[in-house]
Amino acid sequence: MFPDLTSDDIFRIETKRLWLRWPRATDAAAIKAFASLADVAQMTAEIPHPYPAGEAERFVFQARADNACGRGLVLAITQKSAGRNVIGLVAAHGDQTLNVEIGYAIAPAFWGKGIATEAVKALVDTVFRLTKAERVVANSRVINPASRRVLEKCGFAYLDTGLDNLPARGGLHPCDRFDLDRKSWMKRLAPRLLPSMLHQVRGRDTPPSEAETAAQ
Image (cartoon, rainbow, N blue to C red; front, side, top):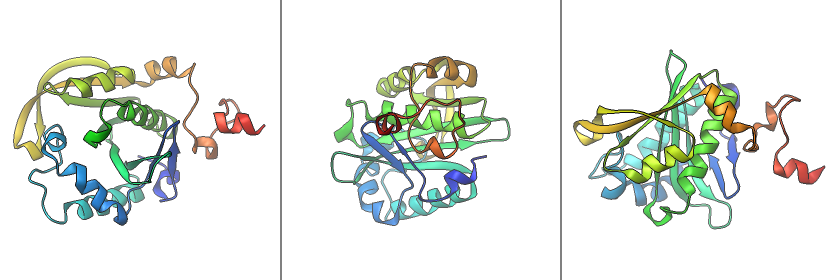
């Protein structure tokens, strides 16, 4: 579903404060540091807890495989202004119905700083720009209002609440469901600029990035 552009490990997305890039083997320790925390894992569908030995390495290997074959887009979040350690993850996976589902996890030390919102906005923009997806969907456990606020800030609309399968949590759990369709995204996009890196595929009718504007 994802194009050749994202299947090369030099692909990355730039935002005001962040780089979103492919995860690397050297990121395993940083990923384990937050993914192994109960507060992080319990809010996700896929992160096991307790966190098994070698799980971070397995995750990185699978993420890179998904990226390389275009099955998904899994990116590590790093800050521009500090050491380049991974502080979170974002992921998008598509299906045959032109729906893309996203997920994300942020290290607790960076909660409440707008990191998740900034990263998710950039990921959603990239999904709609680079794929034929008509709809991006996400869910949030009902006990996680902070995740719900992230989705709302990114333009997602609440659909309903129901029982969703969270494999790493052992079965069905109540979740709030959200979606953002392409038409709604385009309406929100007008006043905003694109994340960088998309200059490789942008047509002449797409506004320049801040960096490119400054360089002109």
